[in-house]
Length: 142
Image (cartoon, rainbow, N blue to C red; front, side, top):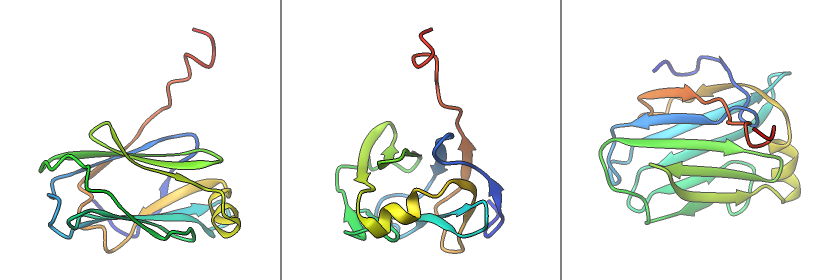
């Protein structure tokens, strides 16, 4: 995975899936910055695979969350989704963080439309990523 390379991605319309081979307790990290159309910050997420794992949602309080109820496997699939009110993180289809984007500073940053993302230099756990197309069949009445 290339670091600090801009990738076209809109987190609000397209969930992000990241596969890792780092175990909980390794200290490896998933570190992603999201950027607006003008190149400004539209949010940043850091998942530190410490024991227990810690989640940093930049520009939001509490800034660091932890969760010990994460499947302790070597191969994990992380899914990140965002809507206008919340950021969600799943590991192997288990919800591990659901964070309300309601605080003024937090809301100001995360409400910006994301058009790009990049994996930051500390992204030592990010092996492969995939942009997922949201299933809208229920929304369309199919």
